Image (cartoon, rainbow, N blue to C red):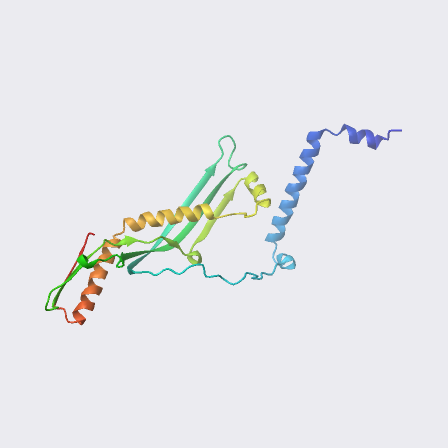
Length: 220
């Protein structure tokens, strides 16, 4: 015999079940958000962080023959926005405002100098050095001075964060910040400053060794 409850259960359409599941999921997410906003309640479910990392292993050692002659500190504000073609931003899309700070070194490679690049007269009173032009190192982002100002994500992106191994990843904006810092370093005249500092260093060193005339050129 079919009971009224059983007949009612069979009459519930599939779309209503899916809608109910979505509403339940949103209710759980909303409850978690309210819990995190209420002062004092978050401490009840606080977590403790433990560092269980193993010791760092030395993989290789490389001799460095370059002279780091100048270093520049840069800061850039990255505004990265991702939009879906056929969905509104509230459903699918993200926008991150990120402040990236980092440094770029300028150096002169002294390891490739050959016999023809260093000339000294017989009296050892005059020296001429021909060096390669200064180059820029790889931009290094400073994590302690870089931070996200704001993050806006659509509903689908927020739901995707629940099943992601790396939610709220900032890797994209960090790479973009490094790229902008590298571009700014190329336009800053940092390499010219490095060559000037290298010339001053070599002139002071050679004059202290008794050389009266020192000439340093670049362009190898």
